[in-house]
Image 1 (cartoon, rainbow, N blue to C red):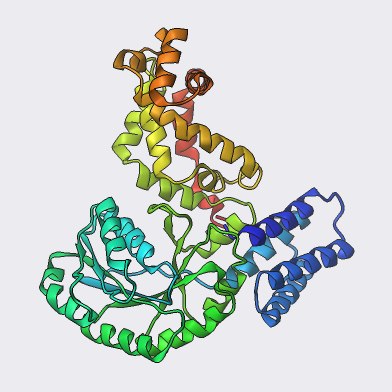
Image 2: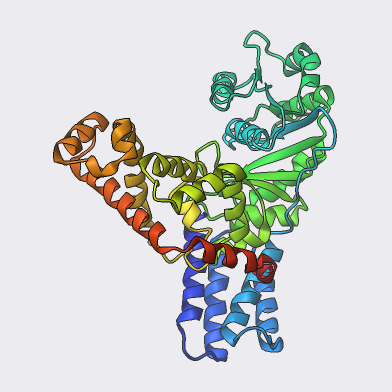
Length: 444
């Protein structure tokens, strides 16, 4: 997330971890680097300097009994950064239909965010519908319709109506059939009088329980002015940040939301419709510092696998019958969790320690595995040992990949099979029983 901002923060943490001697000179040097990183990332200078002073004071005065001096320094940086980005806030779906209005300027990502949010709530058992109120941008309603089809969520649009109020009036009675209705509103290049009037009218006609401002991570310090203006217009209380996967500096939008007293409720972490998550300030900063985010990892796994599926997969993995069909099912489950790099960077102890180049290479291999498995016969999937040279040729031809890619898949499967044979499931269950997550709440 956040490109150079994240890389710089991880570099500072590595510098702290890599030193054998910690003194005031090193403290001043690291804080100087940290100050430059914050300001270069669009964090308002006064806030950045205040942050540095707080860190310096705490590191010198607090004598942590639980941590070494280095660990104490990392913890203080982590703790103060969570304060800078503000507290997270969850939306409470309090009544039916719960109407959510997304507002923001042109290009902020409202339409895509509407679909991501719809998928997010659908996965949690809510009956969701999308409402297309962007009558200004030519392709907006068609884009929303295509996204709705993709996630199998109803979309209320009417290409013949040019006034958002008329669209609301036409479909108003249908809203009662749903738990949540998410409205995608129009934007402009700037917050002019026409947009201000339109948003006010939409708010009046739609009567949403929540009006949420959508802001891109690359907006910088102007986020503060936008948050305040939209709050005055339609009582925006919360913010969604998009493009968190890019090379945006990001510090500006995060701190601006905090200063404007507009809590961040969700962040968009990629281009896929599943790359959307609740904002957790502690987990977010933990990831930026390369410390992982165990809670987010567990949430992703819970979304990707039902408890029953996970149990069956576990039983299969430890049985002698583990085959390529089971491998295929696990592969699809992992893909549901998001990109390989996004999953790896959530793992404490691993986050930030695997090169992005290696992860991209592995992700490229995984993308090829699915068509390869689809090109195999049932006999080959259930008994991989029969896959000889001629079968490898046929499978590669059918999948449109090189023979080496097929052998890569078979090697990965064999390694996984050998691993399953070495792990004692009884010991694993005992470990799971004794593993108390509450011990790790400090940094997770």
